[in-house]
Image (tube, rainbow, N blue to C red; front, side, top):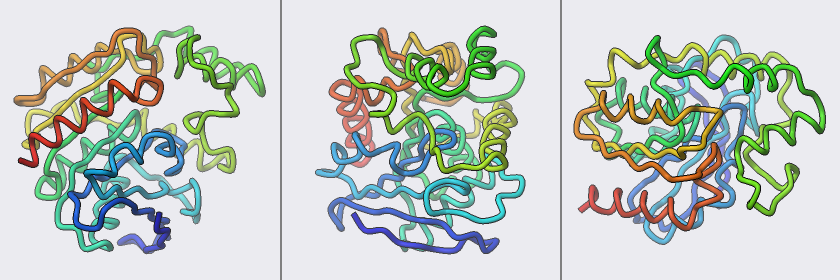
Length: 264
């Protein structure tokens, strides 16, 4: 993997990672809230026989550090496009999970010429119609601390059959983030609202979700499927918020097949 640094349009340093065959179609991977590119550590290589994978550390994570300010899913989408510009990539397939799916929506809406195909995993449209997580889940996430918090968060991402412990996961957050960085990421997810604009998405779109996801209820996937023209919906039985990693043997081929068809 090549590790690079670039500067966003407003001067913020962004850490970029690229790997896979140089001549392959580009696949931009957008991770979840409060996470760096390591979110993709266990799944990215599965795409690389066919794709050139691109990631970047969001502002406030990994090696992308500075005065974070008041970012949004729109500004993070602009960061994603700045990364593509830096790499000289005119357009890419875009796959976003959780908050990364919110950012992916804004890339497709604000920069439609940069998106060849779109994959939205375990994400939500925002706006009043979006289905919030159960109240008790939000209360537990706000109340618990330390080991109890990590174990509870782990249970929201993985089923009891998953053999790993919380410390084995790359999905539970970047523990180097400070309070301001964490709060900024929370606001991005909470304030995202693409609902009214979703019918304007022109990229071929796959929406994929686990039906046991309490972090981001599966009803959001159904809402987006009804809202985005000609989208395709895949729901994985029993999948929680980390379904794309726990059930990668099923999920990744589904995504690759969709992208392969769209790339001809």
